Amino acid sequence: MFIDTHAHINFHDFKDDADEVIRRSLDNDTWMVLVGSEYKTSNRALNYANHYQHGVYAAVGLHPIHLEEQTVANNDENGDYSFITRAEEFNYDTYEKLAKFEKVVAIGEIGLDYYHLDPTKNVNEAKRRQQEVFLKQLVLARNLDLPAIIHCRQAHDDLLSILQDFRKVYADFIPSDRPWGVIHCFSGDEDLAWKYFSLGLIISFTGLITFSKQWDDVLRKVPLHKFMIETDSPYMTPEPYRGRRNEPLLVQYVAGRVAEIRNSSVEKIAAATTETARQFFCI
Image 1 (cartoon, helix red, strand yellow):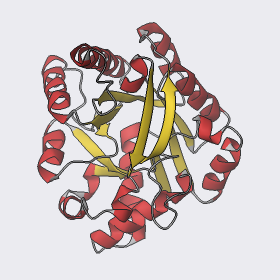
Image 2 (spheres, one colour):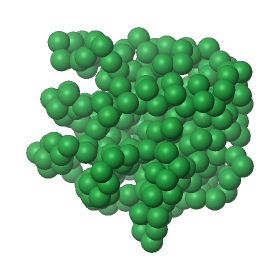
Image 3 (cartoon, helix red, strand yellow):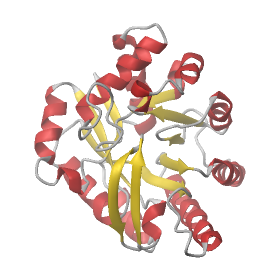
Image 4 (cartoon, one colour):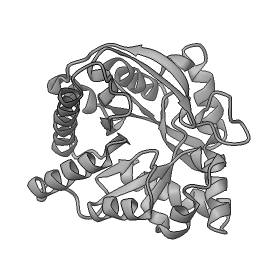
């Protein structure tokens, strides 16, 4: 069994065949967490999760790129995409109401993204707004005793600072027996990984590891119970399907690459990452 801990089947890319994609994964013993990026996709993730008795769960949150209207474009190993975001103000009560539904297992995708900042606008103000909204959503996660799915792109120093301060202030409310957050699509080195581990967080790997050796050393050294696997569908499609739309079923190729790097079996990696995901999301 596999659990894809981060998929966006609730995005426009799957508007014509979302249920078909979900059923294909479930039929092949692959569960998933559908992750929102603003209210619309968060609500859609919950709606999909509610359609299935088991195996499909939701995370709700406001992604930093959706805090202002802008054209978001990318053409690198993270994917080839372009879309226009609409500015959304974070409304605590609205997201709290969504997050209280049974099938919601995390607050996310939240965090910081300096990569997509518009240089023609006030960058410092945009960063401040991202940090403020991120902190509010961390508070929401703690108030509801839900883990946080954290996005970080070109902002690790500021992210670490916020997490360190937050952990001090909310020390009495952060669980000591399980991780309280995950750095999704981890892109750092071993030193950065341990900085997050020391704060009570874990990390997650995508299909990036199947076509880049950059994280081989990290994957050999980090403890098996400190990471999960994901697709980040429709992005980050792993080899041998790179260039196509990604989907949860392909998380098995991420597990396969982890097994190869660690000189282990796919069965062992699947079992370990599934158990970590079950504990993390309480599913």
